[in-house]
Image (cartoon, rainbow, N blue to C red):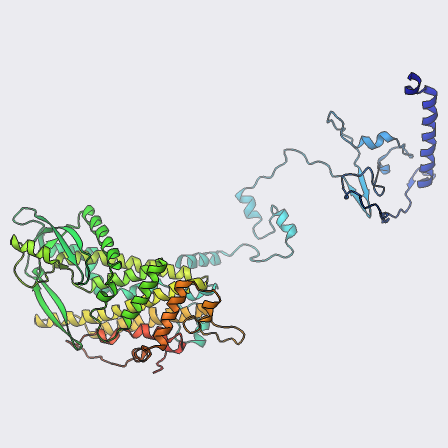
Length: 620
């Protein structure tokens, strides 16, 4: 057993000699050495075909398993060897591997791996601790040139897109100003470049085709919908001036008297606004009188002066102002939930039933979907109703104050002039913010051109059309009533009626026409291309069958379709006619201006789903 395990030194020498002879024959066949001691490398075809293996159980190819691969072999770099003949031994194959101790020789010979048709040289390991310092100076030094730090992205990028090089300072400043000012709605919805000019270059090109188009932003509409001559007296400075000129103090004979009062905005409303108010001492008799406009029917109104209760709130105290704002917000939300909301806000409209029909349709859609945009539009219309109606003391409050002698005997409906103006100043502030928020929602919802947003945008804009009609009515009524009061007081009229008529023209030309036109452009209501179909759910019910609208939107569009083709179509045609009842008289009092404006804009918008020309032209 011992002899079998241990080979004799003589046997080992014989084997070594045989191996050396075999290696020399291999070297002589593969390499020939000339007289100059240079190694000649023959031309070897490495593109050899690997034999096909017929065994079905062959394991998958593994690039790391090079031992058993006949097409790959490892050899030393003969050019780096100092001797003309390279000595090959089995230990040379293991010399390329790292030693167990992990130490490397400083004069390590690079190893070449020869694969089929490819020779790879093993890369040296990078030095540890090598790093790059990036500073603002180094970044600016490479501005306009290829970024050396984007090595991986540069390899994958076949062509450079976008801006090449830094922007000029003038271009940077112009781009910054455009971002601050914001793009116009046309460029914003079309996702094209806008500039600082008004109209911008894109809108100028569009005006060649449609001359009525105006370059606008939603912020341009706010100043038109809130005329200064109507709401100027409700600003904080004017309110402070009014209080200082007409109120000596919130006390009676030096004693502060606080009382709880309830106010309401209409007989059909059960919701009341409960407030802790104070009695004040007036400085003149003017603040104790309150003019009220009564609708007599048959397109006529009457202006009456009634006694007002000396009630108010000290708004100089921030706590009382914040408390009034919270109560007013809650009062508005409660009015929207009233079952008779639509009937009450349209009770004075006797010339047409279209606003009541539309408000019921939109209110039903808002209650079913809880759409923030639609509810915000309804709250704006509700607040404008509060602004144009008298805030009266409830019968219970009136009886209790009369019993203690705080108010005089008079008509059933008593109004606190100062307290009502203070409340309306809060409502005007809230309405101004709600309109701005609604425009922001429009801006975000219309840009993606999502068909899911069609129904809430349409419903909100229909209510906004009713609000614009109410603004026109309020502007004309305000001018006529104020001039009538001045004439009764033997004074010159304060305003010219042309001021109100110009306001109505601005409301119609800017917010209504421009938004209605862009609305149809965004949703392609009337597609002019032969290979594309417009999106018009009011006329085409197939969109509901395709599932592009949800259930409430389907019912909403069906109700609008019924207005267009049902019993109301003649009324729509009549209301959409422009200047059907022209009245440019300087003082047409006691005419009710409401009949001149109510239903016109909303009718034209509905008809625009049939013919877009109804926005800018008279089709009747």
